[in-house]
Length: 117
Image (cartoon, rainbow, N blue to C red; front, side, top):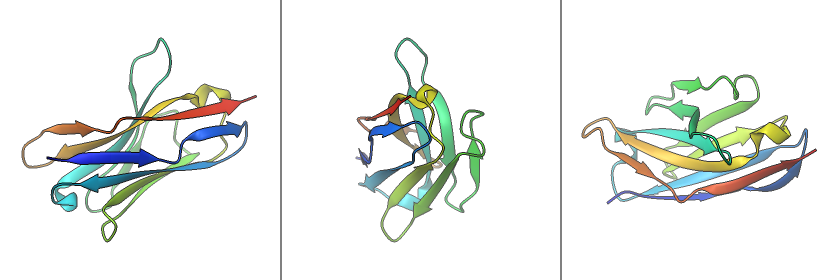
């Protein structure tokens, strides 16, 4: 059973940076596309970024140019580097693992990111 453990959220001022980490346990890391999603109060969950096992990355419109997703296969961990944060980035950020074999999705518990103006 896949388990995802997020860390790195918190409170930051506008213009600041945070790095989120997502540790992957329970299966073969390389067979999963890793992603970050976020959900703000009253809004739908949206894609922030995703990365394939080969390192190909794609981003949601809100993240382009400011955020960078990466993964470390030796540590079974995915990261989201967030720069130039703005209050609109305030949300709960969720790590996602999508199996390229079974097409199953797994979610972390979420980590709160709050950007103050």
